[in-house]
Length: 316
Image (cartoon, rainbow, N blue to C red; front, side, top):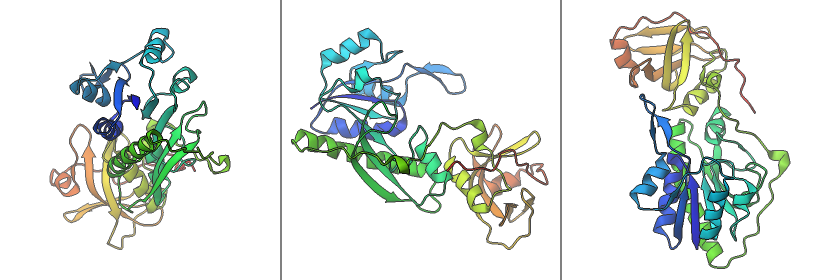
């Protein structure tokens, strides 16, 4: 089977590697143009492009996916399928071109989690199960027919980083299996998504990273998990800010008002609407992440209470 692979970030790499290791031909890799990255904001290739160049693959990086020259190149390649992982919205001119269409690896149990940030929203909502769905792309974003789906439980303390990596591996295996079934001649009938069960995973905004200690501890900890290790959930008090990378319910019985800070040689705690949480790993502004104990050894000037800039609402 001749494949054109479309993707950009780290999440797509396990699937690219799995396809390259299989019996299929990767005729080209489509990625976005180089992006400003790092502190210097210098132009650099996205992870998929970097790996594709290292492997000597043909790389196409059009500014616009409807560019006539780019589309003509795809027609000349004549792929049997497009494999799409964490990429841009494809126009019909692309996804209708191949024999088997465009197969998308989406890290949620569709129709739940439609949108660009499904892993983060799964954690923000405190869900205990997620998975990966392979869909055939249509003009409805993340609304195509489902070809395959795998479910997996979420550990109570599992962070975005850990879940991201796990789902990337699950998705790679599921996509490879789907391609093999299609090549073997199996007729996979796409299952239509139930529109009554749709939840969205909209693009994240800066305000989403802010912690509100007016919420119950469970919701505060879900927000910490959803943005760990990057970019980190933010606790603020005036000009002071501290990113919280890891936290847990306090084992101590503490009577703290929402946002109130307590710290001593044994640790650092913040009050919430119902239960204090203990900070385990933090990231001060301009510094690397460190244990709360190491942070406190630096004798920082801490506020008595953190503000609640976030409106406290979780999109459902």
